[in-house]
Image (cartoon, rainbow, N blue to C red; front, side, top):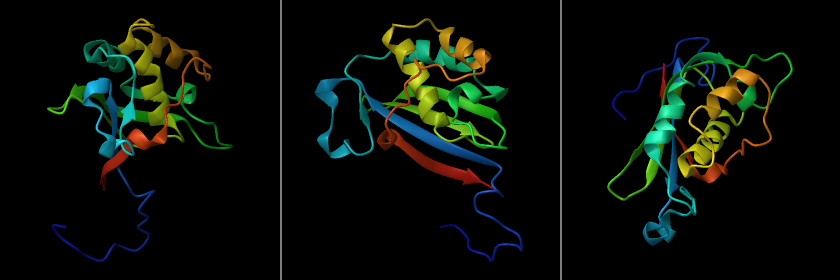
Length: 157
């Protein structure tokens, strides 16, 4: 904690946020799977090509209707400004996806990761997530990954 102050009248922790940053952790090397991290890291049985995942992710950044990656809610928009979506491998060998947007729809990050995993595994081309986005409807081939790899890291006000 760097500072503390009383919030202004009308402040809402959820609706006053300007952006949110999430991380999704994936271990794709069984020899490096740390059993102590099993509650915050997805274990993927196949190695991932992070360069391919990053190439596919570039087409998803920007302001779009993310209906293809969201659970629809009555009267709610699916238009979001996705500022960052990229992957890097840490010294522990774990692949971490960082996602920043003005807001997220329900299950959006987990569905985005689910669309990028087949690209990283080589079973889908790098163009596939953009095709799913352009379709504007949920694609049953997009798997919503389990929640335990997802962590909210920061909220900007």
